[in-house]
Image (cartoon, rainbow, N blue to C red; front, side, top):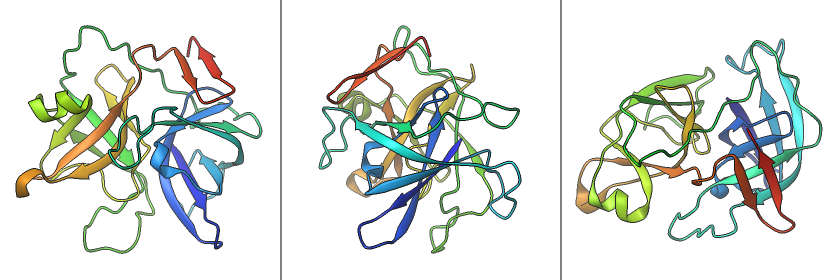
Length: 210
């Protein structure tokens, strides 16, 4: 897991999640774009700074077809200004092959987002929640993964990975919506079909054999 600190034009700060792909690149949501970023690796409890790596972001590559209004292709790569040091607490996550299109049975999401809708503050500790993916026409039409119910990512968890039973990342936490006043549906951007050769932006950034 990566804690992504976003710096705004007016000097403010906000946070998203993300995940390490290799020593040079982090994946997050495209709607987490900001003026600049600082990536924190090896964080669990924000009150404990020992062993945390703090790296600035050199360049950003949002998915070239990202649509802010419709939340489509909500995925982005961040090029780190220096290599991450892989350790027991900092290591890359593998990307899943999309296979035959069937839904994974058991997944989870994690982050430092709000765990209480009434709270104004993010969690100081990394939280994780299990989610069950749903197969419905709406989500198939949007070409996203979805989960429903009370349990799911909160505000500030955007950009974190949807990790399933094989320990690989299948998607990126994107947004929450309530169709026709029904229960909350949590949307996850599918990582592109060819997850081991991602191409974003111009000039192209190609990551092979992650």
